[in-house]
Image 1: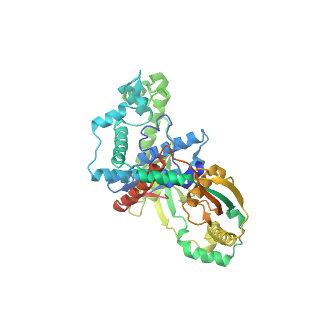
Image 2 (image 1 turned 90 degrees about the vertical axis):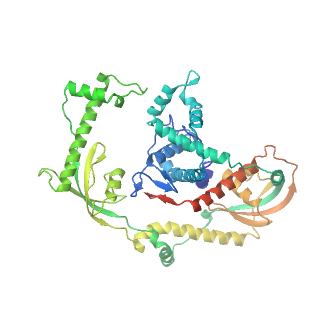
Image 3 (image 1 turned 45 degrees about the horizontal axis):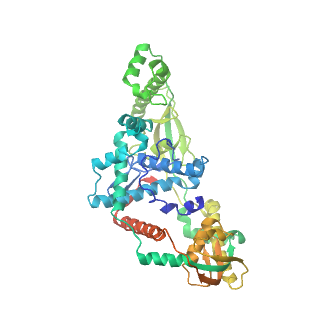
Length: 487
């Protein structure tokens, strides 16, 4: 399942559009390090629909929770990177935005009545068997969502669901007959699996350099930022009881227990002091920022220097995002918080990215070259081995018998059989998406007396093809802009 998802993650999208509160109870998971462009309020825009940072965070958190469930709690951020969860989350949002544009073009809406009906159906908001408005507010508050934010997201999901309800995909009787025939065909095979591990290659520097010449623009040095900065550490003050009590009374909702109840003053006192210290620290940092801009810093203020890039950045992603947005016209950044400490940056100079020399890029290029060379030689081996290969023989197998192809994983076997039963050649080879090649020869064939009782296979295939075609059409119709670098 996981291999299949890795291979098909691009289209692991329109399976369940309405997972409106799947993230509730799962918590929020940071999605790693991103580099943002100039659009601070949105990470992408599709047609007239903008995708916010918050939407991306929630989509990522949703995906993370689902994978974590499949891995029985053994999923972590490293696996999330390997699975490309960042790209999956963004891709899902981009595709949803395409459907929302389509809905907007036909003036489709979700009425307040439809919205409230959907909210009232969510068991997470029930108390004593009935929808409870206070529970509704409490659950959203515990998950750091406002009512407006949740209802806006839910309205979008309902609108997407409505679009697909208006575009039903059904199987005709002829199509059902075709499927019944297809699943009744059984082949007895002789097959052999070739893998890239079967190929040994020697890297020739001259050939490697030719390969690099064609793709060298892909290998660039990082942008370097030369900066000056000042640091504002946390300020600790003594506050009298009156000040503490007044701040607590004005900001009670900041101080809650795990169950959502407001803590009494004595239990919240240390948190109140911490908030007041954080506020005083930020105020001092803002004053230092103004003085830094005007060249009027106190003589005792230490101004440090550093050179950083995306991979060598001691200040964290938020600070890097701020620094990378600076320019000669606007060289100063407002205070950026890093673990409670505020930094104010000044851009001194910028060294743009440049194409690496062959020697600089060699370590990155070599694996790509080896991979391509292995593919080439494996294909040549498949062609020369086809006539006289000695393989493994099977019993009669159908499209549904992936488990009988024992030399492949279930996912690989399923991919192989799908291609096999689409082929009109008795002897041939089939390349798989993971790089393996399967040689096969059909020794015998017969038609079984077998029918598809559920009759949903063709509907699923048609639905998948329809969704893919629809999205491609919408991609051509609505412009997609991504303001997030690195994805």
